[in-house]
Length: 154
Image 1: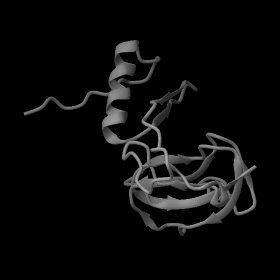
Image 2: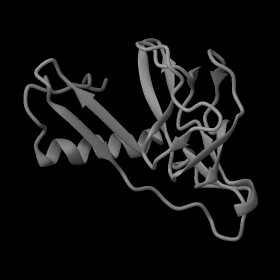
Image 3: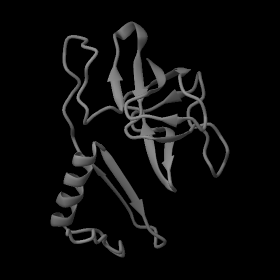
Image 4: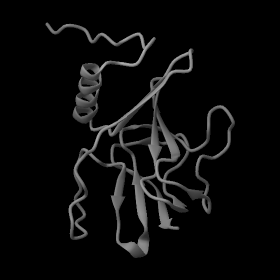
């Protein structure tokens, strides 16, 4: 029997050993980042580097980095689901769209959220661009690697 996972209380920032362990868990889960905050206003964002999309315009891509699949230049960049869950295209707080068609987004901007059993994961833009098309519907159950929207280079 394995020992249950013990998460830090997040009263202070994790030490270097804890960050390494969290990074390993993210990589094993196929996630590229984790963002935490607490009631005292402490924020922590951990990003892990993953393998690049193979060269040559192949339709295949590394399973550890599904958040962006670089399509040929004439079609822009397709942002795909980094995990699975129900798609939220609007902020649950403000009800405003994260990235409506025609809007300009910057690298790292949240363009959607995936929610599963109360856990939310951001879907972020890998490049600067203009939202050309939203390919998935609000509330739809999205699978790992499923296209969500396309960006045209800005």
